[in-house]
Amino acid sequence: MKQATVEFRHVSKQYGPQGAVVDLSLLVPAGDICVLVGPSGCGKTTSLKMVNRLVEPSSGQVLIDGQDVMSVEPTQLRRGIGYVIQQVGLFPHQTIAENVATVPRLLGWSNKRIHARTQELLELVGLDPLQVRNRYPSQLSGGERQRVGVARAMAAEPPVMLMDEPFGAVDPIVRERLQNEFLRLHRTLGTTVLFVTHDIDEAIKMGNRVAVMQQGGHLAQYAPPTELLAHPASDFVSRFVGVDRGLKRLSLLKVADVPLEPGVVAHINDPVDVARRQAELAEADWVLLLDHADAPLGWIRTSQLDSKGTLRADDVDASSPFVHQETTLRDALSMLLASDVQTAVVVDDRNRYTGVLSLDRLGIAFRSETAPAAESVA
Amino acid sequence: MRAGEPLILWDWTFAHLPDIGRRVEEHLVLTGIAVGLGFLIAFLLSLAIRQFPILYSPITWVGGVIYSIPSLALFALLIPFTGLSVTTAEIGLVGYTLLILVRNIVGGLRAVPADVRESAVGMGYSQWQMLWRIELPLALAVIIAGVRVAVVTTIGLVTVTAIIGQGGLGALIMQGIQQFFATPLVIGAVLSIVLAIVIDGLLVLLQRSVTPWTRTAN
Image (cartoon, rainbow over all chains, first blue to last red):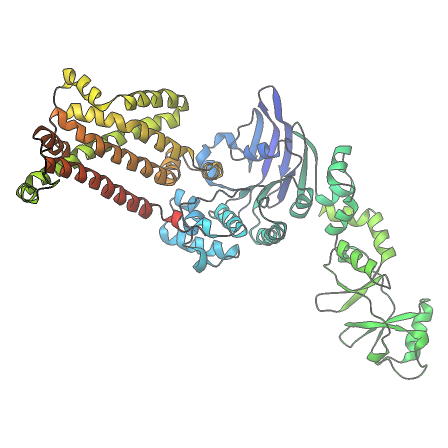
């Protein structure tokens, strides 16, 4: 796994009298995805291009693993940095395999090694090598071309990748899929990524860290996404992240991040009077019935039960939504609002009961700073 | 023409086949040298323009001026310097190809999409790798289109060089005019047209075979 830190140290870029980027300092830890986000003209693309010297800083330094990029010969530097742009820029006269092999060929790899690597990369980005190898870019869909662009950028296992609005030119459904695929890919590769977008939702979704930039090339805030949403550093940032930043924060938190209530539970074949006593103790009218493997079956209203006998599956009077631990709070909230009981039953990977999540509890967790703050440090 | 004479006397034609063959050959050589040399010069000029775009206007202006000189006059003007020679013929012929070729080579190179250029530079292509591996292959279709126009134009112009004694199919045409004899005139003219069509067709085939990606767009 190759990764490197990227650091901007008091970097400025001036075009004429105007500053495109002003005194930018930020450190991207190795293996992170750092998203540069902001309105057009905020200098995010200019900043990105200073990493591979497509733009050279007027002052300050850009360092990769501590080495000033200006001290490396440009073509040499660029061959060690993955680069993906919005229009992809595949070479129309080369086949997909040749396109992917671009940097390995520049680096003089053997044909055998190149062949194996292109095969591996195409599979990695979800394309069938047999089908696409010998096609030309014009024969692929926009989404497929974008995947090839990512494969090409990763070909020589660069420790750093620069992505300039890489998913900006595809439709929303394909974009969502490409984002998810890239995140999965990133978890296995661990490359350091600098990612430019103007879309705050994409920034929050993709970034471990988000650098919000402001017109005139100023860095307005640099923080993990949850921190950004919970504590916007300025009016500009808070306007930029939007009035729905609460909802956005919910989409970053998982059900597992909220302390759940244990709830009143009973197992199938338990005696009815035991279950009823439990409910009375908890001042509840309902108990949740589980099967022998702790999988939830549904709610039983204790007042409806005969006092004798044991609990059976057909005693269940009502159900409520089952949510997985990994569900985002945003989706859980949506389910809660739609259900009658406003209480969701939470299960783990093996469908075992882990607790209940009520609308009240969700609200408390959201308002308390502990959950998001703990998340943001991680 | 003499009254009642058929356009082509086949007896004469068959009797003079070797002579006609030689004229075709001369014609092809004159055309080949002109377009070959013209391409070489135009290519170097285009590289200069690629490096210094400011040169584009003056170079095409000069090319345009040469292109507008009537061919008969151009050859006549050159005779005092280079005599009745191949050099005279070729200076004129090469001169006429320059405008067309420079325009197409430069146009082809400039038509390379900006995103392709940016990704090539961003991945570490040097200036020369960019030219040879990206710009020229992509410009090939436009460049060959220029060569086609240059070849067809030159084949027509070569007939005029017979006036300064350089042979080719123009010699047959001249013979027809001088002797008031239709057959060589018709043969010279028709073969010149046929040559243009055939070579143009061959260049189309060449263009298709060297730009396979243009045929596969869905």
